[in-house]
Each structure stands twice: as structure tokens, then as C-alpha cells.
Image (tube, rainbow, N blue to C red; front, side):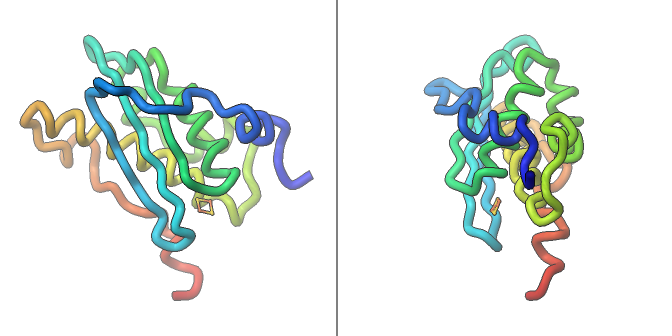
Length: 144
Ligand code: FES
């Protein structure tokens, strides 16, 4: 089987899908290579990720990883969301096929982009905290 039970579960029944009308941070990232787009909404209160929602126009792996990523940061301090790596998301899903690893990067970057927006709204330069929002190397390196 190409995909783990957890990947299939999160793909067919994604958690935290939707928008947050009064979000404190909104991030949007795209994967130039496949054209997939992910939007992430955060509600932040007292340094905690109180709520998180996402919308993904993308492949099954992108949907499953965003779903798992939201589960991993919901109710957690901002610091934990900042430290979330795509590897951690992939591990929590019991792995992804190698060609789909780049899809998990989209989820990590969408969260970082939403956190950057959160800091920007408070007049804080997000780059020293969040770092640069970049596509994964895999997306650059194969071919073009
Ligand atoms: Fe585009 Fe998976 S193929 S994110």
C-alpha cells in the first residue's frame, strides 16, 4: 500500500477544514511546481494557538498533511507551532511516499506564513522569528 492508514484517514476525513472569520493570522502558500495552494487561518490567544483552520486546493497528500499539521499545533503554544517541521508531520502520518514529501512542506510553510502574518499585524518583523518562507528543495531540484 502506497499510503498509510493515517494518510488515508486524514485525506478522506480531514480535520479543521474551513476558515476563521476573525483570524489573528492568515497564511497562504503555493507550490509553483504542481500549482497547489494552501490557506491557513490561526486564532491566537495568550500565546496559544486557540484554533486553526485550513483550506487546500491540492493533492491528497497536501490535504492529509495540512489536516495532521493543524491537529499537531491546535491548543499548543506558538513556539511549538514555529518549531513544527514537515518531517514531524510526515512521521505523525506514518510516512509518505518519497515523491509526496514536498506536499508536506506546503503545510509547514502555510503555518509559518500565518504566524508571520500574525507578527506583522502587531508591527513585529516576522523574519527573525519565523524565518524565510520557502519552497522545499525537492520542488526546485528535479528538472527545471
Ligand atoms: Fe502539489 Fe502535493 S502534488 S502539494
